[in-house]
Length: 171
Image: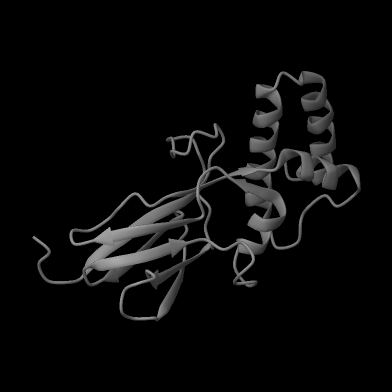
């Protein structure tokens, strides 16, 4: 049954390196992503809640039974990682979904893949580390960009990207 609250809406933001929409064991999580929760259109309420994904990329909202809108808006929350999502990532699934709870609703994940063309262009133009990214996050993004290029069979480009990556000084 629907029972007493709180029910949970939960999920993870992650780097979807293989672009399949599901988080695999080897795919990194994205901390600091702002996730918004609002009561779905056509229902009562109107408060929007926001939370940041934790160090493990997870988020959770405790809510009463009902229908909600869960979303990641890359253009919102400038102090979060969302600005970097907008600049250097492409979503591998919807950034907004309607979720009904009662019982809980886990698995509301948001996958992103580095926009390797934009990342490599930023490297070529001399903008080596996008503002706001930690060195650890930059390394992960760069590795995912290399994976994306390698999967397309562009091994010469991967070799060039590895050379450009040597300038980061974080090996």
